[in-house]
Length: 352
Image (tube, rainbow, N blue to C red):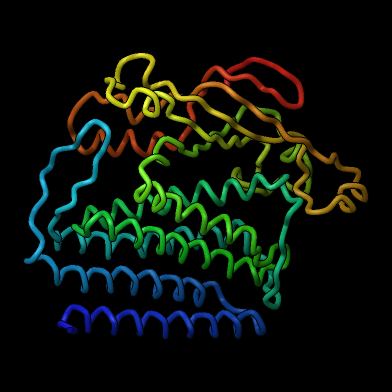
């Protein structure tokens, strides 16, 4: 039987589908005649505002029926199954998130999309940055999905629901970026980028549903001191640091201690040391084809692979405060320089 909450949820879902259908039409028309930055920003703010306002209205309706959770944070976080809605927290999220998303869009508008628009088109850049950009899309999808999941949980939504809403919001945000790329002259809608976005956004859901995958995490690191062939090219002088994949490393870490010694105190050495496998690249030009590299006389680039150790900050617990818990959690997305061995293209030990 449909109650008031279900009716409101169905109505909100229907309205959301209508909104995004209209968004697609607006973007399609804008790609044909060109659009202004203000119009694009308005579209993003409208979508973000609607999503969070809709969630706030629907989930606040459950506030009286859901028991409260304790504030205890276990060592290896086991999510609480019972929570209550916090209206003031919902209000903060509804207010802050659309502004943040809009601000990011403005930044990307200036950094990536300052050129004149072109008709909607696809561009599957399978040679660009030796596909390190796909790793970037995947890891950022995980980060954004996790952040929104924690925001929804902070507002009082049950973890099992929040992880799905976090993934969905991450996919919506990344799809908006891809749609804007689709009408940019030097980019395009990349189906493989979008696939990486979706897989990254869904990985926290997989970890929530299948606990074994919590032993495998993905991280990112950046070196401002590493020589960069990409940044030395005049064509790339105005690029932002995120475009320089030579200085970026992407890591898969394995929590060996949690796999083999689940009942040990992991705050003691060496239980907070994980195994890590990483990849990067050298001599990247930023071109998306061998022909352009050959024509311009640029280098082709090659991959670097690493294996070694990683410091798992989530295990270094000093206090029981929530602030420290979340600080460690999000700092742990960054791979701190650790002893590793570069195994490709030639063996070399070092700190990466």
